[in-house]
Length: 111
Image (cartoon, rainbow, N blue to C red):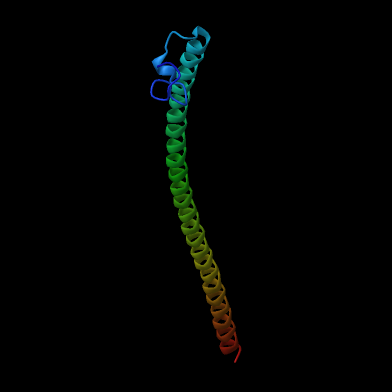
């Protein structure tokens, strides 16, 4: 019987009445298209986000490598500078020794 609980559900089933309201059908169609578009946009966003995270990780690795290389170069430069300083000290000592030797020779010759 029309209006009985068995034949009229409490919430209307729009799917069971496809031609009941053309405007409602158009809205349903637009909603389905919007959902599909949103799903595609979400997938594209997730892919971009994953790629961005990967690139960020790669950039972090490259930056760490560059920092390590820079540190090694600075240490190498520091040890070279120390070597140059030691070489200058050796040259000064040799010069002082040569001067002292020359002075000793002169004193011996004068004596």
